[in-house]
Image 1 (cartoon, rainbow, N blue to C red):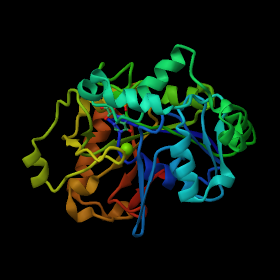
Image 2 (cartoon, rainbow, N blue to C red):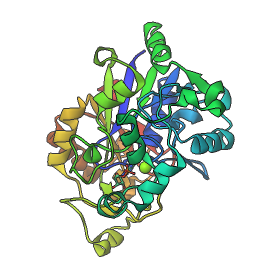
Image 3 (cartoon, rainbow, N blue to C red):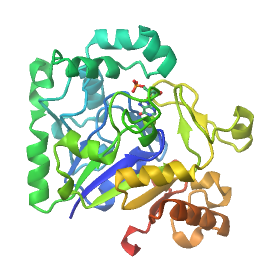
Length: 336
Ligand code: IMP
Ligand code: MG
């Protein structure tokens, strides 16, 4: 039983939602606690023919025994939160920390109209940057000040640390990706907070000594939404000819697509304190491994790619996602 952090290694949208849902099931998580910025994130999970996109509730909602929590470092938009509880029918097991900062309609308005945020940075327009700014100015409302949120308030740090004391399995779900970290990404083309594993632990109130595993999720073909440098970016024609086209879960903007960036992966694995890698989109490297569920089904081409990832990062690949559905996955963490 353990404390596991799951974070995005590139620019976000690596498929963390699916990996979190998988690890929650496999490791029988008692708590899945979300860190990260706020509802600028969109985590997509496909089960059979149903597609879920969550922006506030942790992606582990698909594992019913787990408690779902939002840590004090995460911004809460009460409207998005209420909508998701309703949609996912998980209000009985979802809690938020009373110290979460609150996103107000004015924050969204400012995020969408400020030229620096909306045009230069290309923000998601969800109000996160202006809300974090108000928090730093110490004038924002907190979740505990919002009557509608009262039934859901808890001390997430207390609950998560108590579960770890009882040797239960806790997953800390990161959002966004390493490349858009306010501290380590390509400033100013970043989100409004750090996005590394240490930040996720701090967001839910867990100290670094309590973490056993940090799973960094990398996409075989990284993507980026919004502005900013992207050294391995493909042209639109190139990505289409590879059969890859993606749209943002929150903004529906078309994502920019690039090829594997070994140097970025190395740096990201280092700062995240990676213990193992979850690699998604390997079916784009070799279409014949689509939907594979066993390591023995991987082709020489797919295996060679995994070797490249391991050589670049010096970390083992423990989970391989072979397609969009929740069932399209290979997990060899027990053999590492
Ligand atoms: P903001 O976080 O909405 O201020 O947006 C700042 C930058 O981060 C923009 O380029 C966004 O597209 C990007 N961004 C923020 N959250 C995510 C995410 O969850 N996935 C991918 N990109 C994101
Ligand atoms: Mg996303």
